[in-house]
Length: 226
View: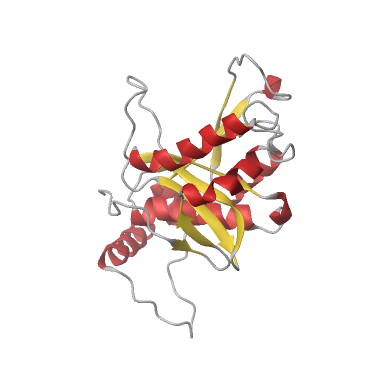
């Protein structure tokens, strides 16, 4: 299935409005990147410096230019910034300067104020839905440190499976990295079989776009023929 969306749309869940990332979000992302609690299991295991945080924000914006439809979204709940979610590019093994166009790596950072309220999972599920249903990708992966139990729980709750544990060497290793890092994955077919495409009795019938209707039919046939 070829990619359908060429630019980032605004996405919505029950509680979140996910808007395409821009320069106006830099203050929020820098605050996250410079928070010791947020960065405990990220990168160096320490808060970023101001320069490092600016570089991260620039990369989050620029990743939307690497593969059509990919990018970062800033999430808001009732007008308040909650965090960001990303569908990032996966470099090709034979040429890291080029990127795969049929799969993505998702990630997120959520403000501590909203921890434990299900926002990380809610935004992540919408990223995965968008990747498969709107963009037609074949796989979504996620990576984190083995000791990052909260991030691993979100991936598992979104249907991703633990597929690999690996070990890298870093110049400034973060605490806990000695236990390695983990990779989780879910394919489009796996995601599709988990979806309940039958509307409950008495529910409002939605008007789907032609592309979404075709995808729903694909999911239905996948379930029936297995």
